[in-house]
Structure formats: structure tokens, C-alpha cells
Length: 218
Image (cartoon, rainbow, N blue to C red; front, side, top):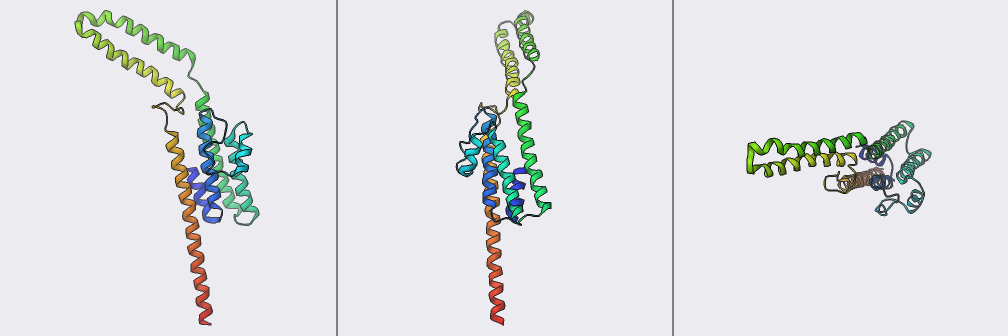
């Protein structure tokens, strides 16, 4: 929710909220691609300015460059007098939350299961399935092959699940649907920025109407 809160607060107080929404959307998309091993800014052309994409492409970790661009956007609003110190600190804390979340995902991705753990699971499953027929054949007779097939499927399925848990950010069917996550954030942040702009324009129209009404009365 840090991405939505960042755009929600920033766009309400700045007329450049659409730019902020684009930066945040580009950031989450770039994080998704980085978690899958891509060090580029593809798929962000609709969200990021060309200069930001060019700079990010030269970074070893492109999302870091985009996070820096978000901070630069906040700093620019502060220099222009749009944001006060309290709001700047709040927005920066949200940017920090985004970067911390990225770091957490990267730690999950780069921390493999211990080799001894993986090897022991495979060995125990193999020994169990090899020796199990000695127990079930006398009791289940011709049903033993079917029982062994079901048990083997379940045991090897659990072993495969441990492999999926080791890196849940891939593109397999059981991995996290990062495309849906990032596109939802891009949609929501864009809508928040558009709403803030519409409210601001409506407020300007009302203020102009009040001024004209006061002039007519005088």
C-alpha cells in the first residue's frame, strides 16, 4: 500500500501528480523484471520519462535509479514551495518502505534452501517409496500399484513445492502473479493522480466562479 499512499498524498498537494504516478508505476514494474533477472526498463515506456529510463538502464539495479528519481521529484516539489517539511518526511518514509520491500523480495530470491535440507528430503522420499511396497503389497494386493502411484505423486509434489517456495517470483504456474500485482498498482496510482487533477480543476473553476460573482456584486 505504500505505492498507493505515496501517489495519493503527493498528487493531492502537487499538480505534477501524474508524473509521480508514472514514476511509481515504472518502479514496481522494474522491480518485477529485476526479480526475474532482467536488468532493463522494458515495459515502462508508458510510465517513465526517457531520461529516467536511460539512467536506470546504466544502473546495476535499475529500480534503485527509479527510486532515486521519485526522491528527486519530492525534492523538486519542496524547492518549489509546494511541499512542506512534514509532508516531505512522510513521502520519503513511503519511498523507504518501497525500497525496503524490494530488498526483502531480493533476499528471498537470493537465499536458497540449504543443500543438506534439499538432499535429505529427496533421499528420505526415495527410501520411503522404495521400501513402502514391502509393507503394502501383502495387505492391498493388486491395489498396491495404484496406491504407490498416488503416494508417489503426493510425496514428489511436496518436494517440488519446496523448490517453488525457494523462488516464488518466476513465471511458472505456481509462482506469484507479479504481472497482476504490478498492473493493479499502475492502474490504481494512475486513477488516484487523475482524480486529484480533476478535483483540483473543479476547485479552480469554483474559485473562478466565486471571483466573478463577487465582481458582479460590486
